[in-house]
Length: 381
Image 1 (cartoon, rainbow, N blue to C red):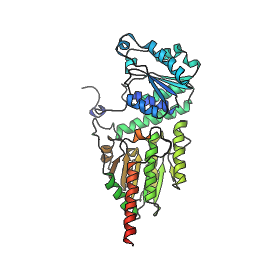
Image 2 (cartoon, rainbow, N blue to C red):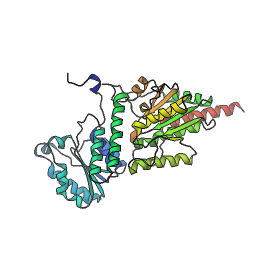
Image 3 (tube, helix red, strand yellow):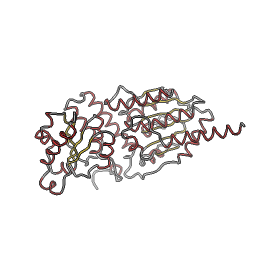
Image 4 (cartoon, rainbow, N blue to C red):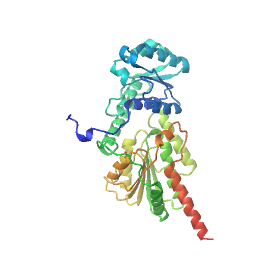
């Protein structure tokens, strides 16, 4: 046995640091990202990122390049990328193949001459890191060195990413060596129970603690909860929608959501941080609930639901959680959440979103409420 403990040996697939680096380039508003590796590396996420507006190219390394190197190939593709798209900001990301054979990405960028025409973020990267957040940190470090973010912002981002890693290892999808994927509880059953509490005049707290673009669908559930409870007005909304914190692109997500909710007269009562602060915002939400709403009857937790430690605070309330991670369902049950719902394929559906996107659980809530209202109106005739 190695020195690793059983809980440290994660046997189920985990996110890749290469993919994390690509998403971070997207967050930095990179126009073109060049992956120095085989054509199939991170294919699915590359396609999704293109739908979100970032061009993703590959050097398409093959067997010959694995033996003789792909340096000249990278230089050529960098020049071609600049010629095709005339980017203001370009990203270059290594892969397992290029890093194992020791390709010098930084030197290739210099030799290509593209830095004379655009700014470049070069990231030496492979997928062998235990934590995918390393890919984000290394990309942000390169952005800092390129003068694209401040030193203080880099340090803040690094703290948030380290907190996110700890959270996943303590209570999330990396807390055990193997966590079976789950589709969660029945959306109809859970929505019916939530409506039962709301229609009985029970008081509830809705916590939106979402990670970046996933907010576009989780916000729909917050909106739906408030709509079905409108006649009772007993919902308190807490959300990590600070539009003054984080990278410009991510701040824009918060502003868009807040504007849409405001247009429908839905108020966020407490802002607990930005969309990149999900790993610590949940703790703030739990503390707020403990201070002011501990006697409320139910809590709806959206997004990083495992990051809102209500049970640790001793808060006795019925918990409804909605996540987009099939391997987060079981940890939520272990944490004592009464209901755990999965929004399938949420992340792909939110890529490139420009506003709130309909969710299955939100739609279920609204439709069941409409059916109940219709039945009541029919009884009154």
